[in-house]
Amino acid sequence: MSRTWFITGASRGFGHEWAAAALERGDRVAATARDLTSLDDLVAKYGDRLLPIRLDVTDREAGFAAVRRAHDHFGGLDVVVNNAGYGQFGMIEEISEAEARAQFETNVFGALWVTQAAVPLLRESGGGHILQVSSIGGISAFPNIGIYNASKWALEGFSQALAQEVADFGIKVTLIEPGGFSTDWGGSSAKHADQLPAYDEFRVKAAEGRRARVAEPGDPGASAAVVLKIVDDENPPLRVFFGKAPIGIATKDYESRLAQWQEYRSWAEEAQG
Image 1 (cartoon, rainbow, N blue to C red):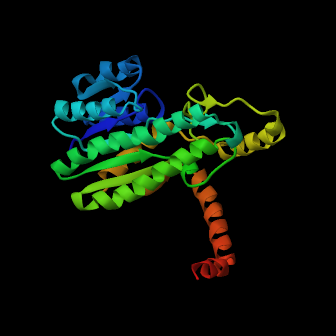
Image 2: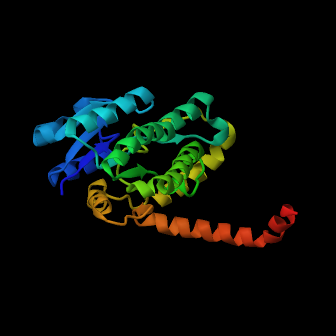
């Protein structure tokens, strides 16, 4: 059964690969990007099955209009992928107000606006699937990308609540949590705060930790086959890691949390009164 997709951030990386994979198997895709020339290769190969839409996801009205346009153009929507986002580097003290707000405008509010636009349309059609592109940084946190972590934790929170709210409508929600992949996430698409000298020594340690986490970057092209499995699954997971590294990071992190919560359980009980 062919499906109709709406994918944000389709200019490159995951979004581009997943759009190509969906089109290759005969699905229809509304692909958004700030620069539509980045979609020229898909337009040339797949023609009318691709609907390119120029979109800045931070513009709420434009987001709603883009979702509606895709729905009306293809006669419905089945899969909505919130992939648009970027990484903001900087220690928490270094992040400016403008940088913090911009990170949340794209990574959190951009996904929220598209989700809010899509849910009533999916509900009316009797179901659908929303894929939220989070990160291993959405369940763990790392130095020098703290505000990025915060944005992905927010995405995780509202998406877990959303999954419960829309389940009775036949709408499924899946959070995709990649580790390091060979995308441009840490390259030209990333933004960097002005650096304070006080963190120069620690910045070296943070960089070493990041290199260790992405020592074996995944292949974005290979991820597309798994995305197709997710949307074809009758009972897809709420959360799924992409890559080999995340499960080890998450296991260590959550074991540490559980141990500390148990250690201070008496304090929790005392606080209740």
